[in-house]
Structure formats: C-alpha cells, structure tokens
Amino acid sequence: MSHLGADTAAYVDGQLSESAMRAADAHLRVCEECERDVRQQRLLKSRMSTVSAPEPTSDLIDTLTRLQAVPPASVPWWVRLQRAAPVTIGLALVGASLAVVAVAYVVGGSEHSDQVRPSFDSYAAEFFGATATAVAASYTVVAPERLDSEGWPCHERLAGNLERVSAGYDRTDDVVAVAYTDGTSRLRLYEQPGRLDPSALRGFARVRLGQVIVWLRTGSPTVATWDRDGIVYTIVTDVDDVRLARAVAELPEAEEQNPLQRVGAGLDRMTAWAAA
Image (cartoon, rainbow, N blue to C red; front, side, top):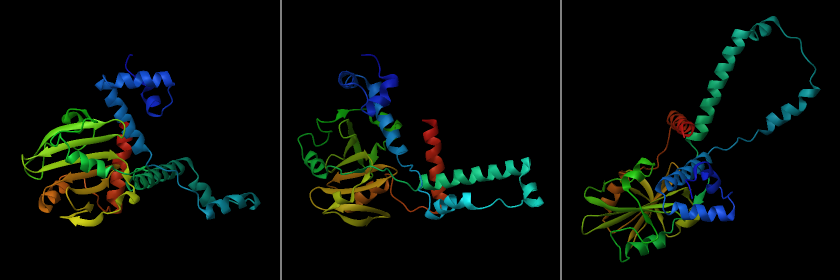
C-alpha cells in the first residue's frame, strides 16, 4: 500500500472502508512517516475540539424576536455621518479585532473536551515488569527526538540524574511512555492527549509538590498525575518526594492565567492551528 496521504484524516475519523482500514493498519506498522502523520492528525483534531460555539443569551434572542415589531426610526445626521464609508471601515476593523481577542480569550482558557482515564494500575504493573528500564512490549519503540519534535515533552534527563533510556508509543490508546533511571531509582513518564477524568482520581490526593499542584497516590510505586494544554501527564516512580517534585517542575505544569496571559495563549493556539 502507498502512503496514506490525503486519506490520513479519513483514517483517523474511521471513515475508510473496512478493507481500506485493514490495509492502512498494516501499512502503519511499517511506515514511520504515515504513523507520524496519523499521530499529528490526532493531536490536531483533539486540540481543535477545544473551541466550542458560544450559546446566544436569552436577552439577545428576545431582542431579535422583537425587531420586526419595532417601527423604523428617523436617523439623525450624526448617525448618518457615522455610517460613512471611512467611519464604517474603522468600526469594522475595531469590531473584528475585538472578536479575535474574544475568541483568543475563550481558546486560551479552554481544555481538551475529551476526558481520559489513565491506566494507573497498568502503569504500576509495567513499572515492576521484567523490562523495568524499557518500555513495555505493547509500545512501539520510537526515537525520543522524534517525540520531542512532534510536541511530546521527552527530556533527556529528569530530576537531576535520571537518564532517559527508552521511549515508545502505544497507538491503541494514543499514549507515549518514556523510561528513566539512574541505575538505582526509576521513573516512567506517560503522556496522553485529553484532560483528566475526575472519576479516575479515586485514591489520589490533591497536593502541592514544590510549586506545582498535582494529584498524588502514595505507595509502591508512587503515582503523580496532572494535565496541561490538552495532555495528561502521569509519573510512576520510586524516587523520594524531593526528586519527584523536581521532575514534575521540569515538565509542563498547570497554572492559573491572568486575562492577558489567557489571550496570549489563545493567540498562540490559533496561530499553531492555522500553521498546521
């Protein structure tokens, strides 16, 4: 089979025929280029879903329904002046700018619409598995540099001296897994598009690690999870709280935004979508 090309979006949306889907699945197992295109399409689709259409207010609907009953009024000269072409163009530009800022504000504060339930118990089981310093067999081994370039934070080192030893991608659940170790302590980082489903956090406590608020489940191993910009991050590790806090601080962290920061984040997202 040739590359997916224009059929990439149809494949992600499940719109191909059954035979075409099977052929595409087989092709993706051997073609890194198409696998990257599919992953990027899924990420773009998940992040585009953050924008939702605003609902009209009841006051606006009531006003529109009464327009037909309102008789036309005489137009004063100063109003006619405002409707002159230069003034109209200026007002239109101001209105368009305000509309862009309003959309950016909404986008900047939005989250991925799909809630996900990370497989915390499976992650813990993988941590104690036979391949403790490598990704599990269910993951396709990929180059960490490639994950970095595609928007998945995949640092070479965490918490000072935990070195990255392997990285993999699970196409079924759309999860990236990265293994770190210093030869004694170990840490696994999982990244998945979406936002945390609150119902998945039973047994977790909302705590502050350093300057970052995360959900923490203590035990053996310790599990910390949070979300940021449409990606859920989960750390499974046996390091102490100080090193765990340092690892969390080195990854994208949730934060409160003021209005200017929120508009800026929204403009950044809109620009990224347009470029994609």
